Amino acid sequence: MTASQTFTARRLAAAALSAAALVGAAALPAAADGSGPRDSRVEISKVQYDAPGHGSRSNRSLNEEWVQITNSGRESVNLDDWTLSNRQGRVYTFRHLRLNGHSSVRVHTGIGRDTYRDVYQDRRNFVWDDRQDTATLRNDHRRVVDTITWDARHHGNDGRRNGDDGRGRGNDGRGHGDDHGRGPGHGQR
Image 1 (cartoon, one colour):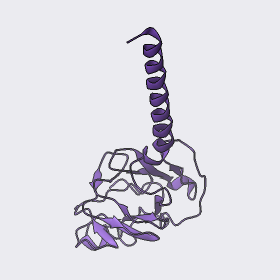
Image 2: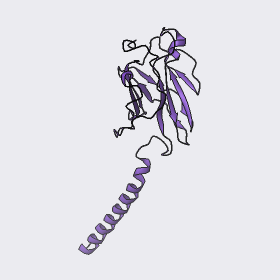
Image 3: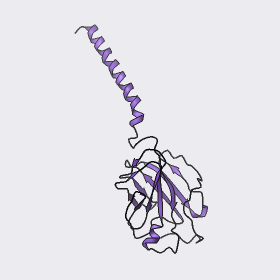
Image 4: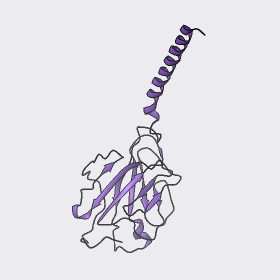
């Protein structure tokens, strides 16, 4: 090979690599997340952290404590291996659940039979602290999808945060439980 042929071959190889890099860079944003369609948004939409009633540890009372997860997008999202956890590190892992677009599922604390609308942690003790706690939803890659924090002393200011970006959403006015007038001493279960 002559010097000019070597130079031309190198220029062709460089041009081919540049073209491949441009095509790859253009495709990267669409595939970077890997967690599903962009038009589906999964979030913690409601929390009933203080079960109505006496606060007994009956299964009925335990199942009145729940977190609602909502898919506000059009496309269904596979929640298999997603987790919901509290500040103390208690974790519930979703198994074999596909959340359809524009639908919700409630994650109850007690024992029950899972359906597409209600799933159960099968616990015998309360999970969510009435006075102050944080619910964190993570996807199957362990990335934070949504968090919500409550403090009964500042009822209504829920410390909403979505995703790993740290942007807050302030007071969203959604029903996040009620302290039922039990006062500041009630809550650590």
